[in-house]
Length: 353
Image 1 (cartoon, rainbow, N blue to C red):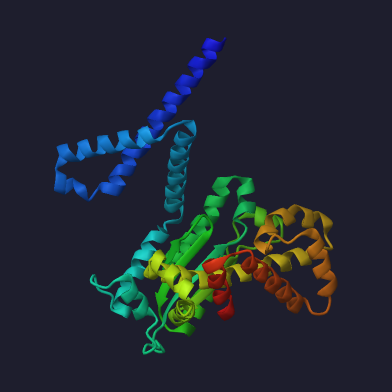
Image 2: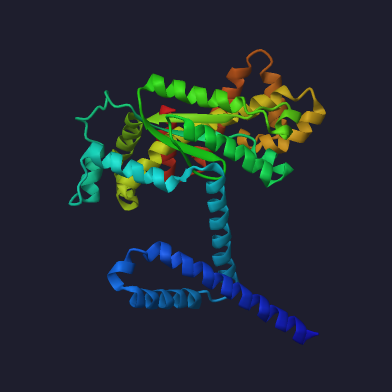
């Protein structure tokens, strides 16, 4: 019996090894494709074989192989979602941002990271005439929709993808249920365009499980203007420790991350407000509350039942005010849970939200 078990384990290990080898073979082409012309086919294939062999030798045990296979599974999942939504991944958005910022700030190949940082915080630039902004959006209730199976969730994602592709604000898929965009149109036009997208989202009536729960498709969004990102970045650069951290992180990439995070923070706050309102509205319907609380709690700052009941008592006559107080308290707790540069960064972003 032990021999059979041992043989089974060896077979499973060999299967995992072959799968890992296949994934690494594809991964090499993605990472080193630029070498094909320079090396020629024979040398390029030799480079690939040596690289894959080296990577496999670094997988010392089954746990390492599992990690490689998990990466492959995640890559396939992401590629499938790309095909469902029709949206490009966030990497394309960052490439677009790179090009825009290079023009706006006048970056050149000769600029050091310090040069680039100084160009970003140059006080002589106010960008009052600029319309450049980013948007972050969160697709609501995807986890609930997936209860009926991922095909239903895929239908919801496709609906969102179709709407964004037809919009003047081109969307990019930033994660499983997150979308982002960058646009250069007047603020009022952008607001109207985003509002139109959100209204069209609410018209999507083909998701039965949402109808059954009295919910409608929703997109929680937040936007951030270029000036706001420059302001946060400039405030951080005034602190010597933060300035050193910015230089270590690649200041341009960190600027882009901060810019998107301002928009994302607004989106998350709107999401939290929506979720908490939905839970409060269902407190008088115990059955509905119990069915939905697990799906809505996470997006509502992981609000506990006790916090919901307490909020309901306080919010009888001033609901929105009490919800805002609760959100502000939770945001402060998030900041206090961070340290060093990350804490200062979060605090500075929250000041302009």
